[in-house]
Amino acid sequence: MTPPVAAAAGARKGPLPMFDLAGQRVFVAGHRGMVGTALVRRLAQDPVTVLTVPRREVDLTCQAAVERWVADHRPTVVIIAAAKVGGIHANATWPAAFLYDNLMIAANLVHAAHRHGVAKLLFLGSSCIYPRAAAQPITEDQLLTGPLEPTNQWYAVAKIAGVKLCQAYRRQHGADFISAMPTNLYGPHDNYHPLDSHVPAALIRRCHEAKRARAPEVAVWGTGRPTREFLYVDDLADASVHLLKHYSDPEPVNIGTGEEISIADFAALVRDVVGYSGRLTFDTGRPDGMPRKRLDVSRLTALGWRAATPLRTGLERAYAWFCDAERAGTLPERGHDP
Image (tube, one colour):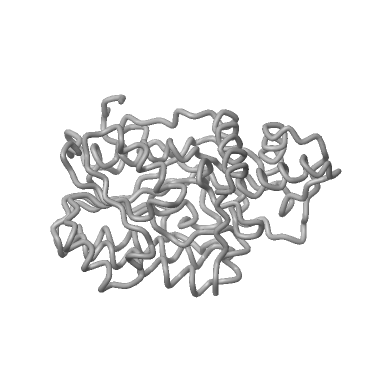
């Protein structure tokens, strides 16, 4: 891995903190999701003990259950990848669930980590925490400087609370708790629910099904004009481990590629990767969401990390995984209950 270089603007001056992961007991909260499975894969490269627990055994929204599990298993490092996630439709349909569940997951895990002496904690937020009208590219200091994008505000508020929890426990208790803001993610183990998935998974599924049915067209939600930045999930996992080892400051760190693409061009790329020859249409009755979202990743770059997976390569890997999972009957389709 590339060694760290000079500290980014706004970060603490002087030598970078070094946290030794070797021998640590790392609890990956949310290990069955897209991000969690990538973290488990990445941590297999380090001499650590990875701890996981299925949802049926511990409800992370229940404070007592989280306290008992952390007390019994004594992790020394915690990565909070667990979250109730979904696209625009899911956020609009179940705002209470998106706000409550994500607030409770963050609060319970951060507090339990403090109470039981966890040495390092990484909270994974989302780029949707930034204002709808944020200046581009979005720097970390734009947090809480303007109104949120209404289509994902419930999720964003909960993620902002998680960032602030980490900062508060650092200030009051000296806890080495950090946070990172990933951009839009895609890759193996994504949610391919027909309505509740995010843009990459939704388009992969629609193009795949249209190819199989020989349908003449595929609908893309919105106008296609908004721009987005997409990060392969294994790159996120590698960046997360890098931050655990090389970062210890209260400010969140953006994780992304620093490159953007319009939804229309992204949909065309997905169509090409899938091998679908029909046309793309745009359902302008659906909301576009944030008009533009590109992260400034200079803080992470200054820490010695850059994304390694080109967009087309990542989409090819994601589609290959999708096809394998569909054939095996194991394709994730996690809808949301009220």
